[in-house]
Length: 457
Ligand code: HEM
Image (cartoon, rainbow, N blue to C red; front, side):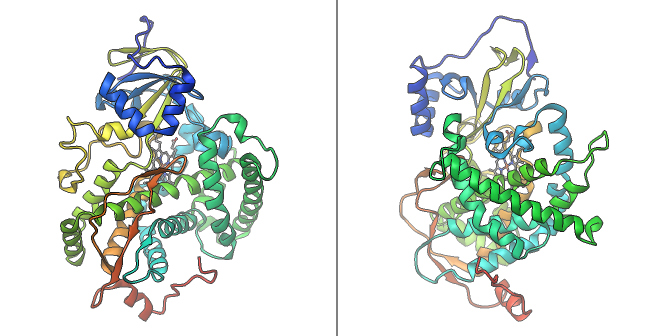
């Protein structure tokens, strides 16, 4: 476990190039330059980066565990996300405030609650795929974006309906601009007029605040408010230990956090899922046979393996609040320690032939410190169980509805969208509707379920 120490500083080795040069390499070709540095210095090295400053990069499971389990007196948050999402976002909180917020948010996203959301996701998948063409190649990423945005909107606000339509339009645009702003220097985030990225973000945010204000008023006026189990109602009813309520402003920041953190990450992983399985025809056959037989183990292992070989978030960071010992290293106060998720997942000691896509490697649940797409410790992704549920339901539904045409084309390359990495060609697919019994869409149609949303979204 990481410990506070007064021992002399001992940093891992690293490149000596000037900060700006290292920064440009990091942003321009993060994956290949990190791979080259790992080849030269091993799994732990020190970088000097703009925005972050001197940064120790770790990926070895023992050090990852030490860092993720370090107390909140030793390490705190080290992300710019809070600056874009606002001071009331989980990403902006530390210490007691962070702990209290998580206590509040964990129950609606706890594994036990997931069965309750499955029908929502299934409905959203069926609504979306009703428009998929037979036998024509198309990008699946836009569909995955709509499915995951609608799923998280409905979990957060409870009901579907017209009030959410504008958020459906607004949020993808805000996420696109916000994801890029997060990785750029603070000055770029300023409002330099409507055509500047900071200005566009300001305007999206102002409109978002108005919509959330209306939804908060509507929730408070709802005669069934006390029985509602959606995240907005839980936040409105929640009280801190001193009896005070969370301010509406902080609720707006937090809801924006959940809507944005929970949407693009899951969608890009689903697009990678399509991209990977189409290149493994035998796996596709086995997955279809499993879903027809009512099983789920191989589907779960496939999702874990997609997250291992194509993690959509490259890394996560902590800032040292004191001088700490981390394994053999002694890291000064106010240093960033970055965990490379991509490098951890390529660790040969933990994953034989790490570049090979092989779901069968997961005979059991993955190790929490070697397989880390959701980070770890007290800041582990709040939405991990929700995302896993969404991906499982989506995969299961797609396999029931469609035959995916395999492909021998080379794998799609990484495309950075700012925060998340997506398949460069959008997770292209060719599908054919399955005929015969068991298709869920037939059951929905015969039950008279409205599978098309009035706005076509
Ligand atoms: C495949 C989908 C997802 C991936 C890969 C992912 C990944 C991550 C990662 C790497 C972190 C940082 C964890 C750390 O620093 O240790 C994180 C944090 C977070 N995620 Fe996710 N996430 C996903 C889906 C979601 C969903 C669906 C939600 C919302 C329900 C969500 C909400 C959050 C929040 C609120 C945090 C901040 C936690 C904190 O600082 O305490 N994420 N996520």
